[in-house]
Image (cartoon, rainbow, N blue to C red; front, side):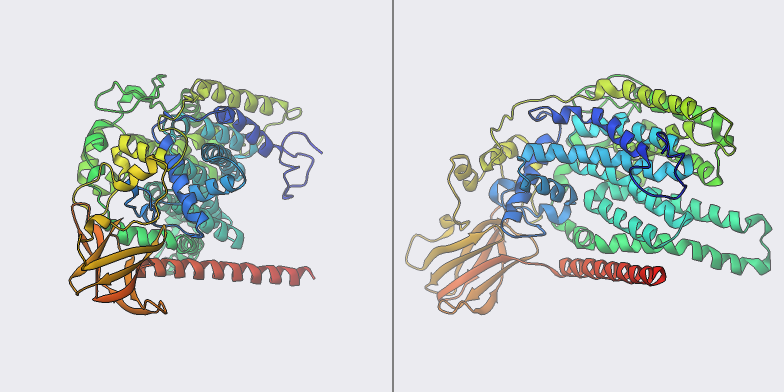
Length: 617
């Protein structure tokens, strides 16, 4: 059995023992995750606290048995916020898995970062193994793991969701690439699963990446069609058959895209339709003004690295270089373009160059006109976020330097090419290694807890999300006082709203993160009960019979006060009032579509397995 590249093994055999390059990719990634293995947590990173407390709040819902959390009861100082209804949850499901295995919240977040980086390299290797060969794919995988923006996302920004999305992007490219060049059930299903994972990782990155993916697929489909039926030879008689052939080639990636959208519908349908019910003005302007965050051209090559923030002008506290080693390899790649072994690889190379130039341009000041005229581009928030598209494309170009030529030259043994691979991969690691560091700090808010969450929100104004019924964003709350003092909250009824006379009596009977039951007695029909909860679609109120607890009627909900708190009118007499957060029609449609897609995919896989088993028998 060969040591390098599986030369002594028959082509087509599958197995980790054969492809040692997979192990080499993982080994190279260990250096990049080194700071994650140290004790402590990099609390000073931009979103380090966000990532931990998002997971903390996600865990509180999971512990209550809510398998798909949407409402986060303790955000906004205890008034609650529909965070996971509009924010992709996959990173936190993975983090919750690590937490349930025994890791603390900080270590669970670090584990997700480490896993994401490893998967990013393995995905890039799998994507490029066929078009570039194993050596080129390994070099691209190493370049992707060590491209500075990837490290910036991990150690400077601590952007958990975006880091997971960066890990998924190569898998999406791999899956959809296969649907065009080698369409089969596994590639279509794999591409659909990967796209769903991307959507569930970061809706923002998905929004930026999908147009690039669509253009890539269009280029690949037309290229495949041209190989099989040259477009130059089209005539009036052949146009219709050519269109049919084009549709035939486009169907597999289209099915994969539909599978991905269907599987992730549980998230994106409510997120799209119900996002308008949250306030977005607090994330516009100020520190979020995109005019202040364009990258100057010289910064693409500057070795400066820092843990500050970006701002107006070229004196940013962070580095935005593309990476000296991967960029040098990309500039060398045209020298071997004609030697690439397949049209598939050549077109991939050309597309990567065009895409890289476009992504980098969107981060530079000359692109301000595009940002101002095309509203879609502003979803990125920061111009430098387009580097999330530049990073995988730059890695592809770096890998082409070691791509297998169309006619391999005779060589004595594998060593010359393998030596070049090791040296170039080592050069990439060496060039980025000074940036593989984290600032380990103690948390200013104290241990991860509800009290720590309240203190964090007080120092991070953008953390206090609110709904459109909130006219005045709170700076503190009665619940926050209780949390900081270490007291449990047994009710979110606003007793200050209860009149100090004998016309209304209220007694809390039980509460969860998404519901509360209270006993009420009202002397007339003019009374109401107010809760320390923001209103958002899905909150429902019911009047129950005091003895049987059967629903008598659904009560209307209106909002009161500058915070837009839930207020429920109650009828005269003794009753139970139930307040509960339920699924809305968009949520039910999303859940149903995801369930149907998953069931259909499972049935298709089962049918294919039985068919293959029958043929083998």
